[in-house]
Image: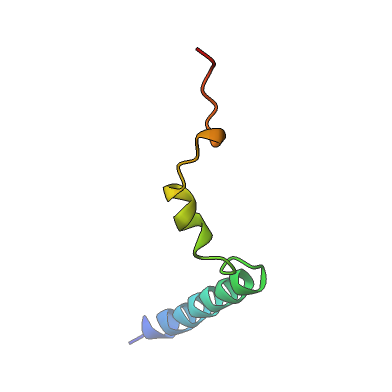
Length: 54
């Protein structure tokens, strides 16, 4: 029972930190463009390659 006096406040602090980190990520623009990075992998443009000339 005495362990609950330590674990409950500790878990509340960890949840508050997780919520603060999520709010910071949303406000800093981490989730603004979720589609472009996925499509960039599929975009196989030859002009983007840095191959040495033959």
